[in-house]
Length: 147
Image (spheres, rainbow, N blue to C red):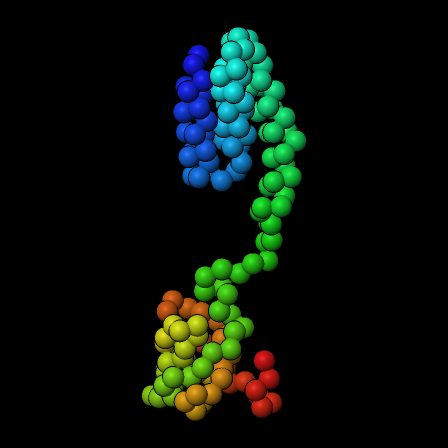
């Protein structure tokens, strides 16, 4: 095979890696680049295959686990989306009114509908206790701004 075929396949592996992000296609892509270099140097097909297999296997077994360990920290305690709002301190935008004590709060630039457990002044800080749909259930922070 001509070296440019290996080169094209290697680049395709690198492009595919952008979609998988598990470092396996990168190992094969680098193996293909090694085979491309062997082909360019005029080594036979047998050497090209051996270099591809050896380089890909060495990278897959030796380097991939280290790369995954350092690139992907699997912390299962990271809260995402609305779960990250629970326990946060937010600012009152509109005081609660009506029988349901509904008002508005702001967190990180987002304006949320809020159901207040107790009255709160505009600009006061309140804590998010739970989230249901698009409504935050909040309670006032006691003891002069404790967070």
